Amino acid sequence: MATWAGETAPRPETQAPTLGMTRIPLHELYAQPKISQKLLDTSAFDVAAWLSERIANRFARSEGAGFVAGDGINKPRGLCDYPTAATADDTRAWGTFEHVATGSSGAFRTRSGDVNSADDLLDLMGKLKTGYLDNASWYMSRATAAAVRKLKDGQGNFVWQPSAIAGQPPSLFGHPVVLMDDMPAIGANSLSIAFGDMRATYTVIERPGLRMVADPYTAKPYVLLYCYRRIGGGVADFEALKFLKFGTS
Image 1 (cartoon, rainbow, N blue to C red):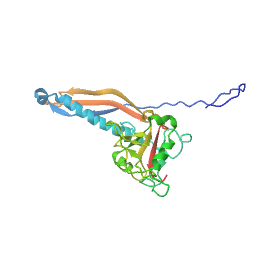
Image 2 (image 1 turned 180 degrees about the vertical axis):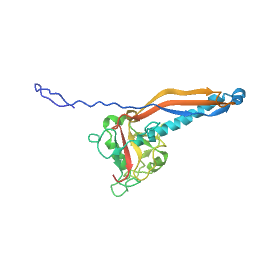
Image 3 (image 1 turned 90 degrees about the vertical axis):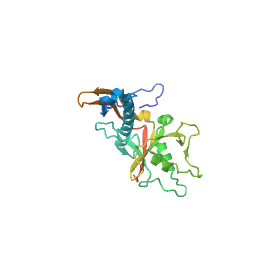
Image 4 (image 1 turned 30 degrees about the vertical axis):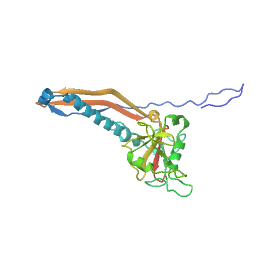
């Protein structure tokens, strides 16, 4: 807390922020395929390396799903697993995200007169504190993006702006759009769109790299390739991201 004071006025103690501890456990993601010893010995290419690459790709998909929708049981706790409330940062309990309701179950608000469906996105932007805006992005699935691409402003212009530069993401109201297919599709009371600074919001911890242990003994004549990775994730700042809720409250 900060307060103004006169030149010679007393300076009593002010309220200090409260410190807390965030616990983000490491979880194990594993795969254990088997391959014949003969194939390993006679193959014209490195089968183990090829298999390791395929497993790494599958791990990346599983990690992405965990960071969005994981329940925290033997996996990361995802963004969409935390509770939300339609209350502001100053009054909302820590551990809860703020959501903005569209006022219509499973849909954007109905366009009529001066009311525009795209106003839901502007209302969501308006809830994020200024300090998070520089790094803020939109997060949604491809299915939700297809619906957002149809939204227009009051002058009939599409609010979705495709990038003119190869490799750069599209934007909404000046902020990039990140497609995350594990975000829920638009439905009754769904939290299908998020806006905020993900780097401040979500923390990922890991033991870098994919590890592989070959076991040629347990299942002869096959070799078991035990591949694993240790990784965890959880929310560190509940004010840095807001959700758009497709519901009435």
